[in-house]
Length: 559
Image (cartoon, rainbow, N blue to C red; front, side, top):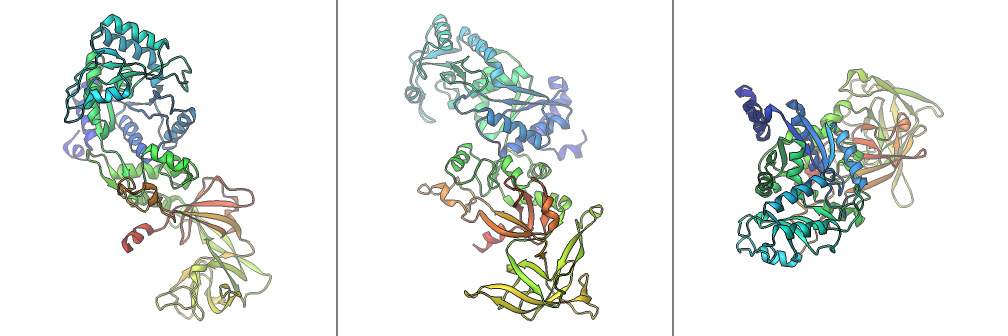
């Protein structure tokens, strides 16, 4: 690789390239993505997926998908299936599919090997006693009174643990390392704990389960992983990862840590996301306000946009907060290229064109996508009665309001100039209808006498309109970092009360009547939208994916 190419590599890829060029691991690259199936994947996982699968593809290697299923109380087949779907939706396919539970027998035999070498012991201390004996960062630890059991006794007790002769928490198997280490992870960490709990794959075959730290490195080794890429919080676990592999004298992958993705105005903790779901703050794991991959999918994001976002933010060694605007930029750029344009009036106000013939209609030609010449045009029906956005009319309009008001002329996109003469109100004083006239000579948006109008608005024919519910989604939290609020503040108190606004009476142009779940469109002047799975034969439901501009950035600037 030449110097210019090398300068463009992130530090993880640079390590991989250096290893390939030096012949390490026979020049092979084998990565893995190892989620725990205890919840739905979020956008932070997408960064890891793109990195692990992307490196394997880029350098002609392999990438495994491995489920770290060692906590049976929290893991479910539902989560396994959702993860499989999410990885595929992002555009990746694994070379091998494994589960940590595939290795339970091998891990058990490896544990016996450590016991025989005098490097592990069965401990009877309670959780509270272990915590007390472990000490603290500035406090020396004390060895367990059970640390010096004989190899024979440890082997017998470990066998009895496996056979189910002890209660939950009664005993653990611990590695014998260094109770005075400055790294707390090396102070005789637990390798196995007793859990009389049904496992989603192995059933009741096991009642002892390996810890993450004991499982992870050995699983990597068994699979022949060359580069074990994980987020920075595992950096302090790396000495233990290395210690186990060296003590067992087996294949030793290289653990590399990178900065996790922290996204503004959201939370990434699975525990907190679960709290949002269980507390009814959101509708489900795939609520379009959630940072889950399935939530982004339901909201209308494309896999291409998420991969582009992960590429744009890059891979670094320092944790930081990423502005949501960067993610929105990626989806806007992609949808701008591929999304068909359509008309939708979110909050309709009726317009009657008094000089248009009653009972008649015509069709106007509208461009499907100005970014794609091959997208062609469509026909939009036009008639005497139309809907426009209520926000496009103002009775007492300021000078710089260039939309519709009494006595002013505006352009209807793809149609004619109209001029408002009267605003009809109900008994409460609310404007319910506008009386207008149109200029037939301005077809296509130009006046033969050369007069100009500054405002162009969208519209839908009343006679042909399709009813819809439109859900306007925004950031879930007002706080940039909901996890970093004052100690006396509940992080959920920062939930944005306007994160979801439902428009129940929106009007669509008739071409949208056949839209299918998942279809994406740009509603002209309103943003990008996606058909939601809640749609019925009688009423379509659309989710706003993203606005045409970064409205939240303007809101933050005002504050």
